[in-house]
Length: 310
Image (cartoon, rainbow, N blue to C red; front, top):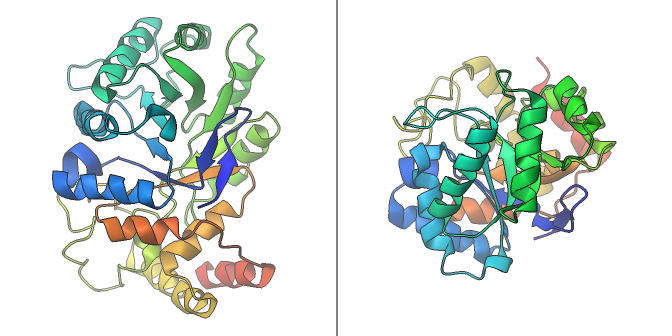
């Protein structure tokens, strides 16, 4: 496993991070979830990403229980706030920042999180209020660093322009071979301001692993076949799945799996500190972790672009 510096911080995070959206505390059985976390540590993964809203708080509770057995300085822990909780709490107001960090810390059974992220931009709360509150929880020692997910570039810049507040160090966009939007504005802006990307859905919900064949039902043990985890799979039609299948021969020629190819492609971007992967089985963790260190040359990158061209 290779490690990269997270933004302007002193944190070194594994190139592959373990996520918990739709999986832990929810769509994956407890024993399997524990095995995935254990395998992540065995594989050199030290970066764990979650959110207060995942499984209505159950993902944080699960991680709090399994991580409590490990030395706190052996992993980098990230969580988020913004989306509505089961009781209706939501947003990035001063009140919510103070309330949600304490609730997350209690569920996670820790005194601090390394990274606290705004899950989306809150247009109902003044940016100055949000950044002021986040700055306070950093200075109280409850949070080490701040990040955001899927913020518009103008709001990122506005936060950077505010005086006397803590600066963001990470951006969490959706970024993959099938979702390249961040390349246009977000990545250049962040790279110029000491902000790293920690990308979600780098495998496009498993589509880039090649497991979903056009015209065929999804594998019984896959996310697409799960009632608890399939709701985000709309938009992947047979034409797209057929293009993805063209990546198979490229991966085979390089001696890697399709998942490793897709992760290596994301990690080719210097501004990406880590790719967040979800896993429902330990063997998926091992396969994904092995993508760290794979370097794609110009010929491979050109072949990938050609394969996915419509």
